[in-house]
Amino acid sequence: MSLLTINEFPKGSFTDEIVITPQDFTGTTAAAETIEYKVPAGSAVVGCGVKVVTPFSGASLSAVALDVGETADPDGYIDAMNIFTGGDTFAYNSGDLLDGTTSVHDFFATADTVDILVTPTGDGLADATKGEVKISFSVVRLA
Image 1 (cartoon, rainbow, N blue to C red):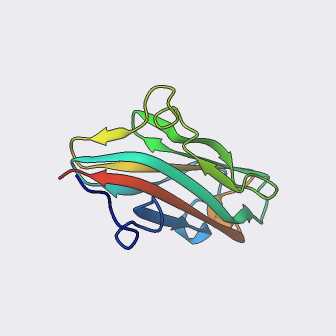
Image 2: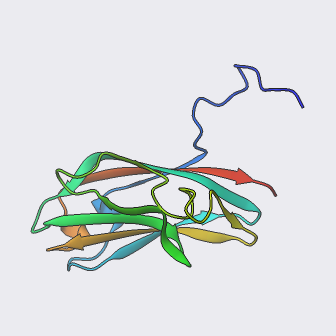
């Protein structure tokens, strides 16, 4: 097997990305909301990175936490990241499905979803006046 040339190698290791903002949510009370990202059958998630472009804030929010994973392990990719003002800026593979604790990948034999769970304190996510978070995935598609 030959190595990829510099012109063939991708500029980053992420293959998929989703951006979340307050407009993606409907809740006006402090309750967790989930956004689903579809993953095709025969795929393995081998990496997950999060960049907080603009922290969530506004209204009566006092905290916002982010977990990324799947149904059986909702924080298996990213665990309890603070995306509120003054919180974290970056996270990478901090959940036990990708950090080597229990695994280094998550294989999907059938089509499924990656679950992005956002949990506010003090108010609903739809009431936030600011917030932009980029969630990137490295997905190996075998099928």
